[in-house]
Amino acid sequence: MIDLPLRVLKDNDVVPFVATHPRYGRAEFAVCLKYVRGKLKHVFIHPQQQENVTEYYRLDVPHNGRAMFQAHSWTHKGVSEPKIWLHFWCREHECPAFRLYVPKEAKSFVASIMTDISMIFDA
Image 1 (tube, rainbow, N blue to C red):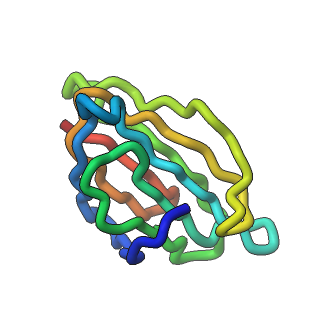
Image 2 (image 1 turned 135 degrees about the vertical axis):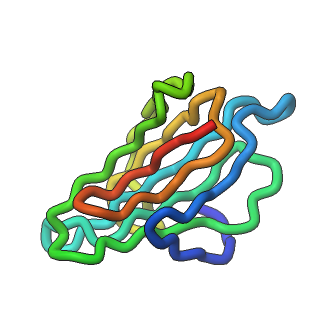
């Protein structure tokens, strides 16, 4: 994708971002799901269409790899759901990937690493 330093996210780490920019439009994240022998091992998150991007992120699956990836938001706080709009093959990580539109009301996402790996968008 781009040459940026990698930051490994732990459980409940908060990543702030600007959801809409007058020049770049709606912010996006490219999410790469790295599988090893059929089990999810890493989730790479690359910020897209954002002005001040300083790093990209990795979420590590701490257990046996039977986790799923979820991207959702706090709808009870008035934050709309994120939208997946483009699926592609990531040449850098050699894995399936997709682009994710962030909710227009969101200001950050929280990395949740439990039974499932989640990006929870919050206002």
